[in-house]
Length: 134
Image: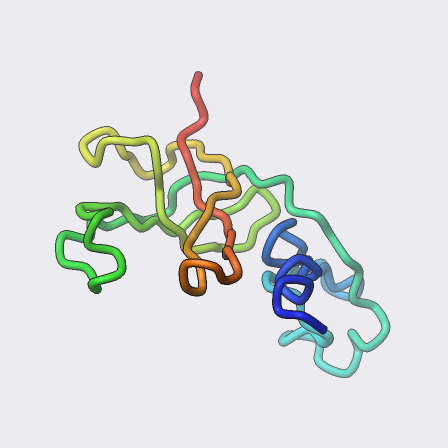
């Protein structure tokens, strides 16, 4: 399978796919085959779930010193987001001034270009979060 096709067909990368254990109700992202709470009781009971992409800021930090490939972005914010479905995701927060970020603030996932594999290589995309207006 070509690299581009592999990245395109990775559902959790582009679609925020998770799984729910139909034994205990816990949601996991990224998806897994067995619940870490129910163990064997969850086998065959893990159901695919699309995260709706919204949640709230649980914690955040501002990165002032970054690796060379992220120099152009600094300072940038990294947030822990508690999704409405209950899972926690870590990502970059975009379109927001650090002084405006608050714990509990509503955010939404958005697909963004993350980088590329050389000048004529594969372009990588992934999710980042932005504030929800309103």
